[in-house]
Amino acid sequence: MTVVLQRSAFVRLQVANVSSGVANGVVMITVPWLVLERTDSPARAGLLAALVSLPGIFVSPIVGGLIDRVGRRAVSALSDLLSCLSVLLFVVGEVLGTLGFFLIAAFAVLGAVFDPAGYTARKALIPNAAEASGMAVEKANGRHEGFFAVGWMLGPAVGAWCIEVGGPILAFALTSGMFLLAAASVRSMRVHERLAAHHEEHEHFFDGLRSGWRVLRADRPLFVFTIGLTLMSGMYMPIDTVIFPTHFESLNDAAGLGAVMSAIAFGVVVGAFAYGRLAKRLAAPVLLRIVVLGSTLALLPMGLLPSTTIFVVFAFLTGMAWGPFNPLWNSAVQRRIEPSSQGRVYGLQMSLIYAAPPLGQLLVGWGIESFGLRATFSALLALFAVASLMIATRRSLQSL
Image (cartoon, rainbow, N blue to C red; front, side, top):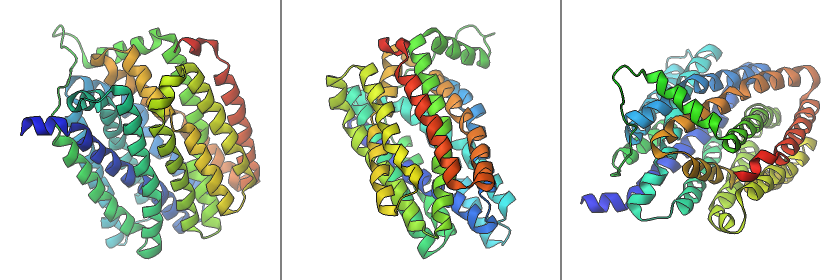
């Protein structure tokens, strides 16, 4: 029985991966839709998107240390269980008739406290699950990110369907069940985890976090890679969380929003599953430049706010170009960082990624109300293009 559980470890990880992806995809479009529906304020939607990003800044480094010391399965399962309970609060608030903006914001921020832990722990589990299942880790990286993108692809479509059929609360009820399935799947895995050694008794927990920062800072190519990811995340997340929902809510087109978000995710699925083959043919720096520049070129035409059909086409191309990025990120950390420190490095990277979007989301929400959607979107895309060129021309990434 133990042997069977070991061999199915990667499958069980992917059940959790897809379930969590679906749940997060549903929440990603349902929460801003709910805010816009009840307040008709893009600025409030931007404020909420910024608030939701804040917990990850502080939680991710702590989670990284917990993963290395307590265990990856334990952190992942507990995180998804707590996410399940936080999503149920939306349903309770609606039943009681008290679900206004402030409660929506409070529940969304609470859920955001738990989400980084599950995502980071599952990412750290990839080598363990691959080893138990007899799979090459490069192949496992591509498949893991591909399956997560499958969840993201299905999530917006499911969320849009729930909004159309039963309203946002139906979406939240379904989401809670998906988080529960993710927790159970990870908990049932049987893998060997390499935990960080406990050295002197006087060593404090935050000493370990600082050592994780030193590991990342000492590896210049990986550090520059992380800063580039942070910069692009800070400019892209306002597009997903503020600009797209505002545009499609103004058209009263939940299905259109779901189609665009699903098209991005489907493109990521294609790109992520292609990573294994691409990694064999292209050096990491070359592949990184293709990803950064390709996704930028595909994103730029959306600034014209075309018809939904054209939107969907370029959304797919954007996702496909970006798809190999997360497997490339995983592989870079796995190759360059010792297993016992990977959780802390992932946690620190996630903290930086969460730190970047809030300012952009606030500015974009304010910009839409002050200058209009098209002008704000165009200015943001211009900045995105400049940042992409800067990242693609960094010489320090050549040794990644």
